[in-house]
Image (cartoon, rainbow, N blue to C red; front, side):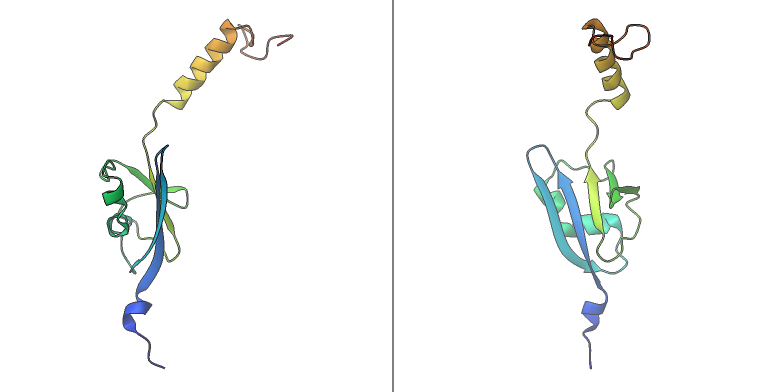
Length: 116
C-alpha cells in the first residue's frame, strides 16, 4: 500500500476566537510541527478579526495558556483570548462596597447582613 506523504505530515487543528457579537471555531489542516503562531496565521482568523494583535494577545491550547512558539498536536484547539475589560479584584471590591452600602453585607466583616 502506497500512502501519500503529504497526508502523513498533516494534522487537524482548530482555532477559536470570539467577541460578544460573534464567535468562530475554524478547523483546518496544517503541517506537523507548525507553531501556534503559524497555525493562527494559516487558519484565516486574522482576516476575519483584524483587531487581533497577535504580538500582544494571550493564547492557549485547550484552555491552558501557552506561547505562540509552542507546537500543537493533532486535534488541538488553539484559543485566542481577548484582554480583560475590568480587573476582577477591583470589580469584586466594587460589588462588596455596593452590598455594604445597600445593607446586604455586614459593614465590618463583609459577610451577609442579618435579615438580608
